[in-house]
Length: 210
Image (tube, rainbow, N blue to C red; front, side):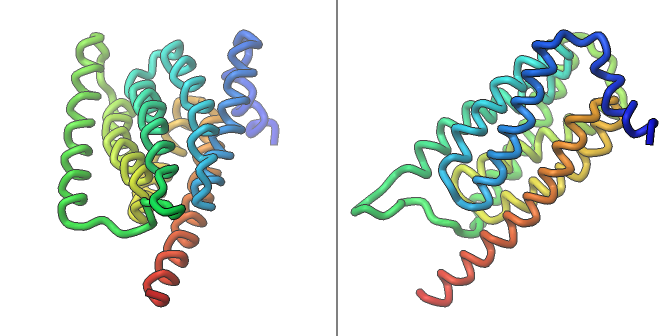
């Protein structure tokens, strides 16, 4: 039990209180954001913005450039998603839950590959000696990038990508000694599974009533 306690506490020994408080706030708002996403509630975006803006700052300070870039992108995409989800025509929301078509799948693949390339170039530009965790970071960055776009346009497949990348990220952050973030992504995984089920149920109901 003490080993588990130390795993979560040790990384924060000597850490300024401000950073601990900011990470705790990002932790809570990040979970709220995923909760609202599974409910198809537009509050996913303002809560997500709070979490991602704080996380960008914390990751910049920690030197995790790939993760920092992703969270900066989440912040930008949250603004776009907020606008897109809010759009209405004749008092009905314009964007509804749907599956990706062939074109969107190809665009998603392009985003995935381009994001990995850009993340790799950022690491090398800053002179980082890339190790296995960095390559995993580059890979998950591509997945998260695409997942965020799919969520902004309400595609069911966003949840599949979140689940896959979250499952990879849980042990990655644990390996880095970032216990709170590892726990957060474990919770994200559970919420993403629930989100997929809820969105799929909603989509199936719309198909049956159409």
